[in-house]
Length: 285
Image (cartoon, rainbow, N blue to C red; front, side, top):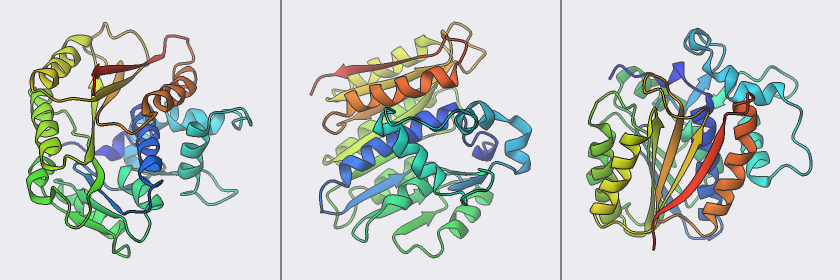
C-alpha cells in the first residue's frame, strides 16, 4: 500500500515491460475476435514526468528520457522499437516537451478496438481515484479499487471473451512476493486457459529469479518464456540491476520479437556497455 508508481514512471523497467506488452497486444489485435486484458496492478494509468514524484527520483531521465535525447530512430530501427516510441509519443502534443508517460492501462487502452475490454485493478486509494478519473469516458475500461491477486478469481475467465492477457506487475514490497506471484500465475492460467499470462519482476541478484522459475516448473506449467534486461551484472543484491518479464503461452514469434526489442534498448539504457538482454525458454510447450 506504500508503493506509488508515479516515482518510477518511464524508467528502464517501464520501457522493458511496456515494449514487450505492446508486442503481445499487436498479436492479439491480428484476429478480429475481441479480447480482454486484466491488469492486476494498474497504478494511475498515465503519468506527468514534470510532477513532483517523477522529478524527485528522476528515474525517467535514464529510461524514456534517454530516448528523448537520442537521435530519432533511423529507418533501419526495428519495428518493435518504433511502434513503442510512437505509442508513447502519441500521449504528448506535437512540438511540445515530452512530459507524459503512459502506464500499462493507458498503453493498452490506446490500442483497444470496440470489441475489446480492459479491466484495471489498483489497491492504493489515491491511485485508484486517479485511475478512475483517467478512464471515466472510456466504457471499454473498468476500474476496480481492489487487490489485484484477488481479482484473478473475480474476473477470470472474462465474460463473453475467450482470448486475452493477464498482466501482473506487483510492487515487490513483501519478501515472499516471488512465491505469491508464481501461485497467481498458476491460478490465472488455470482459470483462463486460452489467455496469455505475463508477470514483471525486479532483478537484484539471480538466486530469487532461479527459485521463481523452478517453482513455475514444479507447478507443472508449460510453454514459458522469460525475458530479462540487465543494466549491469546482478552481483549487488542491494541494487536494482535489471528486470524481467515471464510469459506463459506467449504468442507466435514472441521470443524473436522480444529479443529484437530488448537488444535495441539495452545499449541506450546502459551506455557504459554493461547492459544486455536475455530471452530464454524456461519450459517447452
